[in-house]
Amino acid sequence: MNRELIFSVGDLLCALPLDDVVETIRPLPVQSVAGGADALLGVAVIRGLAVPVVDTARLLGVDAPPAQRFITTNPAGGPLAFAAGAVVGVREVEPDDSRPLPPMLGADAVRLVSAVGVLDSRPLLFVRSDGGVRAAA
Image: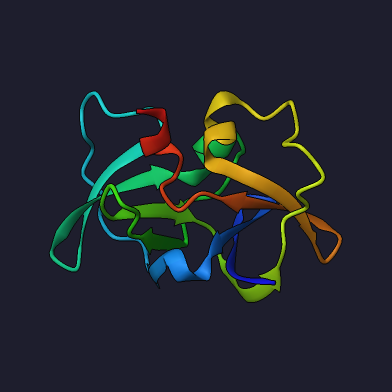
């Protein structure tokens, strides 16, 4: 079983590999960046670094209230923050590798979601720690 950080995005549950998570913090001020990707909220200064902040709800194509947490990761391309809802906790869960990604996921969501699973009878989306943003470049 993999240890995953479970968090909400609107009514969805998402999971990030715990080993890829740097920290969870309260949302910080975000400066808009002209010409950025549609799902890029902008850049926030986190621990002295300018970190891109992605709108996880927009990437998944769901409605969600304003972010309650930023979840930071540090993939090979540099640090990244996910704007997310509440952090549910850390759980040992596995994706259901026998099921393909739902065909109705939009292009951004397909880049973001690596697998699906179930947690407490709810769908669980396994999210790439690079936000799928760098994979699209």
